[in-house]
Image (cartoon, rainbow, N blue to C red; front, side):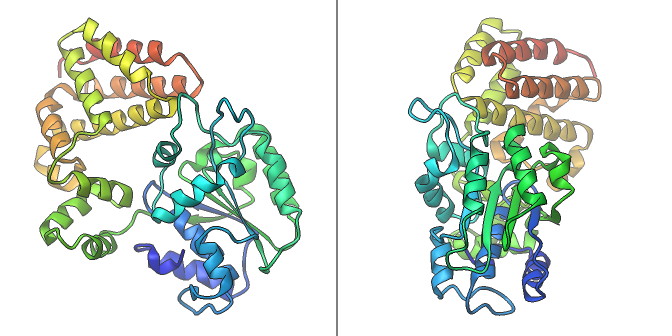
Length: 382
């Protein structure tokens, strides 16, 4: 992975390169930013630049032996920790159990999300996490001597998924790191990482991809689309490359995502007080994996926000509303029912359901309870 393969972030790239050229490499770094902005790819590009034998002031060479090994994620001094799931065959999973799938997943594109990773490995009804037994692997790997490079690099993707035991082990390693070791934590939700780890890292805030860079990248890759279509997609994506590629896939056929279909159905059934239909629908949703329940609730919160904005500021819909065609059509019709008198309560109920799901509550009961509460809240008058 090279810096040039990642859209935008010109100033961030210069800053990261400068830490190496000026020999100011921090042993613990935290890359923070929203989904789909390429922060994991930046971490890998940084590791490649650090190991490169012929680096320039702009990028790694991509041709030396270390560059080629890192591009294939097989360099012996580059290690990864990432969320995994328990299965019938693997009761105490660690990242190495999923390393072949991880390499395939990462090399497909510079842009990654937890949802796409879990879909890639085909999870069932388990929550993904970085579990206590992973901490022993961290210690084992980092106590090894470097094989080829000057530094050992450990990239921890989604450190917010670490349980307390693994977090405490990592803290000890960060406080007393082995020589020539670099930790790069890549997080979307740093507020969920224990404070003692946060305080010991050098923070790099990775923003959304800027519109110009997104537009240039998409036009080069999808040249069959008109400039106007690309610009529409860039606006809808709002700096998220993963969302942009989904919008491109759906632009003409306008396929409805499963999350959208379920959200629209729940709202329609709740408005019509169709309890039997709500029971059937929530039971169907509950059959999916727990992580998918969380993605659905997070998606629903986004839809509530956009629908509410359409209600209070319809004249600005092309500037501040980020919805695909069918989402926008539904939100436009439904916006009169999402207003200042119920938006806070609706948001609170969806957030409460999300917290209960995260704490391993019974998904079927949580989703049905939420749906029944919506039938009351949706009837509140503006």
